[in-house]
Length: 145
Image (cartoon, one colour):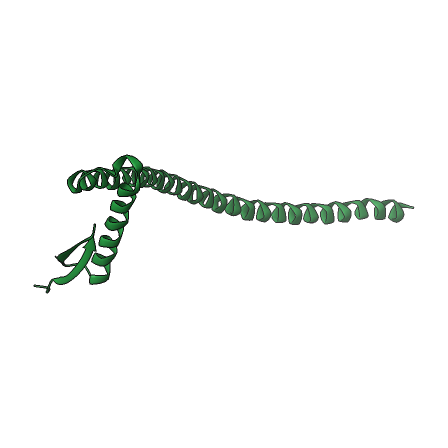
């Protein structure tokens, strides 16, 4: 079992001993934070006549209010993050679809280039045959003449 940390802190003008698993620095920062909040409550004009318990309760309410507001912000950010992650997955799927489509189009392009090249070769072959055929007709009248 991990040994517990122990530290004496000043909160609201009184010394308290804190014992916990957190570091002494962390516990000291908590105490400083609470002490600051108590001072804020104590400084307000209307709270100068409050007793220690009422000051502690108001301080607790203020800290709880902060906690709830930050929790709401955190929840909102988590929701936004989930939405962004959902959109990211959606976009990644779109990218895969487009990559697949691109691959198909590139393959089709290769096939069309091959077909064009074959057609050009076939056209050239027919042209050469036609020229040879025309030459034979041009030579026949010379042979008769």
